[in-house]
Amino acid sequence: MKPKQPTFCVPLDEKRRTQLQQQLSNEIAKLERSLEQIKASRKNVDFSMIQSYKELIASREQMLKSIGLSVNRDYR
Image (cartoon, rainbow, N blue to C red):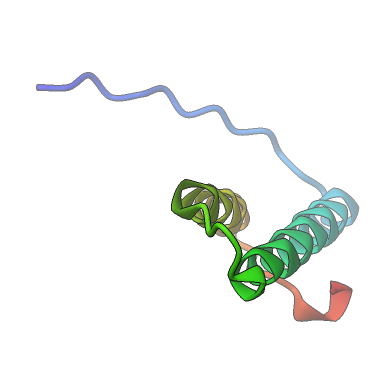
């Protein structure tokens, strides 16, 4: 059986949670725009690059979810 990974929690006040939500939402928006540009270029499409962008977006969405937040489309 795989040992359980330790979980580290850092308490966040409301201001810091809002800042983190804004930062991660902005990063997600930037990554999504870049991903769309890569897909639209249709020249030498690098599928590993596309997958990397999808994973970067998913990891940031997971970070938000883990602290009880979602992507805030207002920050985009």
